[in-house]
Image (tube, one colour):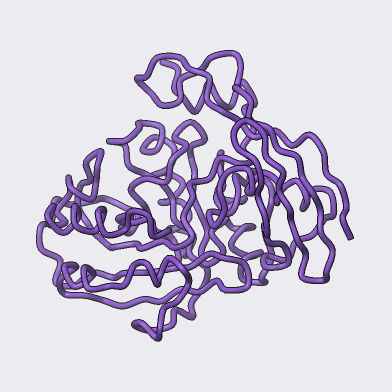
Length: 301
């Protein structure tokens, strides 16, 4: 039986400009099974999950559940749960972490400040290797389970202590899909070797652009524009480029991408439709998901 990921791959659907938008990620360890809407259909207290969803709305913070790769026993009461909060804006990327006996304490967070990149010394600074967070929630889409779980397991078996499974990051048809923190670059159609290269690059403050969907700090036009400038210039520095202006509205935008050395580019981005029709997720009718197309790049300085 064909899957949405198979159809997207065979149709060579472009990846650039398809990452979920999140300037800040709040990731909560929650072992056990996950439902389709994991914040309210897992062993996390659904009242806490609903309250976090409401509190995060409009703040730039995206909340998701994570767990270690492997078999997931139906355990109800972990004694403590690890939490990460990660900000992904260029030049201001950071990860803070703690272990909580009760995730309800997260309702006291100032999510608006965290979304703006202000942690005010919250918890402890995370100083470990970059995190690889792989989407594996088969209740959202079977491709995430069929392709994401084996990838996460392979990475963990190879000694990847920085590998986690995550509930949902969008783009099922690009499975296996993941993002790397602290920079927030998202990848699709990933292989274990490609993830290892992306993690090695992130350790060095670089970006691996192969099969990159974009940096979550920006909306989709900005993601596509920044990757196009990287392709043009060969720039690898994770924090060398920033999206400093986006003008226009669908289906056309003009995006300004600036370099820390003073250079800048004007990038014309258009929204097109992916043809021919294909399923955006398994079990859905055929559709024409939008795609980001860069038509021109002009050097400004």
